[in-house]
Length: 88
Image 1 (cartoon, rainbow, N blue to C red):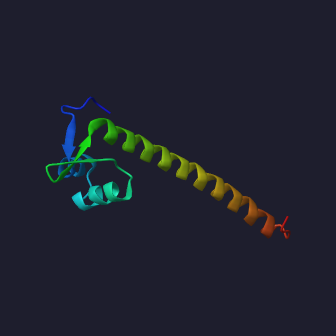
Image 2 (image 1 turned 180 degrees about the vertical axis):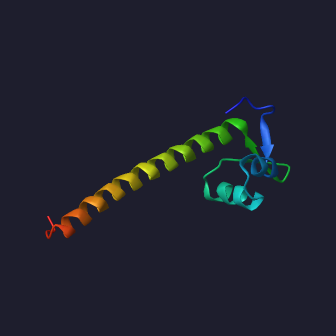
């Protein structure tokens, strides 16, 4: 990810950067998925926090894909065993 042009971003700016609804960004803040600071009654997100959240999300997605691959392989092996007439 490129270097930020500023240190703090609003929820609307983060939403636009990530192509999600502003409500989604607020939900991430409320659930702790994205750390934010309240300044003047509005949430502000530091660039470094945004980077951390994106990297963590990418790692979760990668782990999820790896788990899916394992499940698919296990399922394929199980189906082959069933077709062969055995469960083991």
